[in-house]
Structure formats: C-alpha cells, structure tokens
Image (cartoon, rainbow, N blue to C red; front, side, top):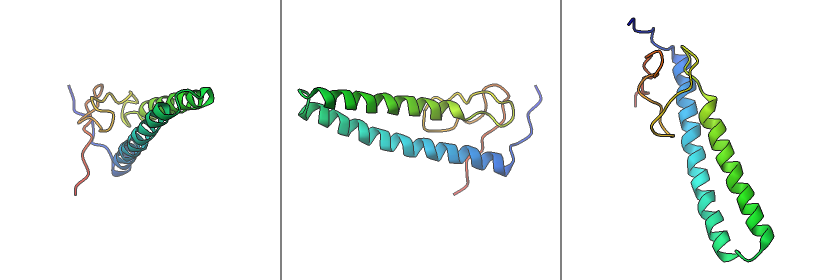
Length: 104
C-alpha cells in the first residue's frame, strides 16, 4: 500500500483546532453535568427544574455528538475514529495519513 502525502500545515492546524474545541467543550460539559446533578439533588421535587435539567443534558449530548462527527480526514473524507473523544488518532483508519502532533 502506498503511503499518502503528508498533510499541509493548514490541514493540520484545522485538526488541532478541532481537538482543542473538543477538549474545551468536554470541560464545560462536565462542569454543567455536575451542576445539573447538584440541582437535581437539591430540587428534585420541582417538576420544571427536572425538565430543564433533562433538556440541558440532552442538548449537551447532542452538541457533543455533532462536534465529534463534524470533523473528517482531510485526505479521504472519512470520519475520524478515535478511541478517546478528546484526542486525534495517530493516523486515519481509512487512508493511513498521519496526524502529526504540534511541536511544543
């Protein structure tokens, strides 16, 4: 199998930016999940609070799913399959192009 051409700096920067967005989103989402859990514990008897908290959790899950599925391999256009939702894989599982890590 022939190795694909390396990614350009612009393509790599787009992937790194996506990875940073995912990391920030997950940090904010985990904080909101903890706040929702605390609110559910404190005000579990108030119906509208439960509904608002459920809506917040569903929105966070939908947003995380959309962010995860949004980015594709710049070479072949396949979805990036990651073992961790916060990090880019070492290379594309379809075409094999390497996703080099930024230096420093």
